[in-house]
Each structure stands twice: as structure tokens, then as C-alpha cells.
Length: 331
Picture (tube, rainbow, N blue to C red):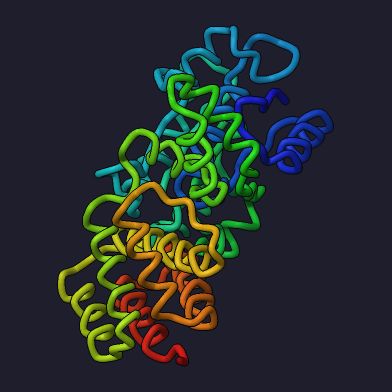
């Protein structure tokens, strides 16, 4: 299988190539990974492979089916669950009804379901019937931040493809090819900060990274942690719930906070090379006020909470967990 357009993920690509060579593509995949890790890229390649009519290795990228699928205009590749399209029971039932209508022009009919982790149990059970009893030509690609958020019965009917972070070298090579006009320093900084998630590096270079609300929230949280003011930390986290931050917004805040905490650790080691004056000042403040033990504890807690953001844990619980966890960090 031709998967060179997916950066990194060598073991996953070898797994897929071996499986497709042995018995062809599956009727259902769960594609799991954090936002920006390449879920849509892999889904696009799989959907093109499923509707490819070029013969030989799939996708061929040259037949009409591949070109339409990769251009998001193929009539037999159906996208659902995107922004404003909730995968509720009614939507899943509509997909099930549509699945029994034969493909327009391709050998397969492909359904790409984004945000699958947001489906409730009734929606997943409705989908389960389709995975078990659907027509042979129908294929399903479930995109999720966390495969564990799906029912075990759904997972057992699908092959799980878990995307891995790319290396700094792989990120630099990708970014240098995509942004030939950017300096090596900009490329290296984005590759180092993205934690192996290319989408974050792309957002940084395109000026979309760290939306102001998330960065300001993370900065406030770090400053209160530096003051070691437990009440102020708890009050800040209570405000997150009171102001109805959703999981996506909280996840963005956690991303920014983790980057700031790591910058503090790097600064404490005397190795910080941060060009942004605000971030550099915050890193210096944190390195001076907080011990490595507190900083590593804050980093571990934040990583744990980012994982929870991809599951059924509610935003209010995450905010409370963050406040309690930070307040309990030792001196």
C-alpha cells in the first residue's frame, strides 16, 4: 500500500502494507491520535485506496477515484461528524440507511466519521449494528482522539490504527519541504515545540498556534503556581467551569500550559532558546520560583489531563482535577 504521504509512523505503514497485501483492506478502521497527528491524512489515503480503480498498488493517485477522494469530491466517500454535524443516533441511522444504497461509481462506499469519541452509547450501539450487518461494499473509518473512549464492542469490530508522534528530524524535513520560504530557525523551533504532532507545527508557522485565550489562561495558571497560592489556583480552575470552557478549549489551554512548564524546565537547565519575549519571561519566572520537582509534577499532571480530554471525562471534572492536582504539588 502506498502511504508515503503520511509522515513517520513506519511500523503502522508496514502493518497496513502487509495486511493489505495478504488479504486486502478491512471494512472498518479506528484511526486514533491527538489533533494534528495525521488522522485525516491517513483517512484520506485509506478512502482513496478503497475507491481506487487504477489497478496495482493502492492508492495509485492517478485514477479518477483517487483524485476525487483526495480532493474530497468523491460521491462514494461520505464525511460525517465534522463541525456542526453531531454523530447522534438520528445521524447514525441516516448513515445506516444510506449505506444500503449501492455506490455511484466506485467498488466501495466509504464513511469517514470524525470525532467518533463524542458518540454516546446509543449512537455507538446503532453504529455497531451497521459494522456487524452492513453491506459488503461499505467501509467505515472512525477518527478519534482516544480509541478507549469507544465501546469495546465497537472496537472489536474494527482494526485500530494508532498514530505515533514523528521525530524532530521527520518534522523538520516535512516543514522545510512545505515552507521553503521559512528560515531554518523557524522550522527547527516549530519542529521542537510540536511534540511530534505535525498539525501543531503547521499551526505555529501559519500563526494559528496558541490562540490568545489558551495562552493567556496558561500564563495566568503558571503565574499563580509560581505564587504557590492554592486558593488562587482553585479559583482559576473553578472559573474555567463557570465560564463553560469546553473540552477543546481546555485541551488548548493544557497544550499551552505544558509547553510553558517544559520551557521552565529547559530554562532551569540553562538551555532555553525561546524567541518570544512573553514566553521567555514566563519560563524565567517559573524556573526561578518553582523547583524541578514541582515542574515535573505539573507536566505529568497536564499530560494525564490531556489524555482525559480525549475520553468521556467532562470539562468540569477536568478543570477540577487540574486545580486539585496543582494545589497538591509539594514545595
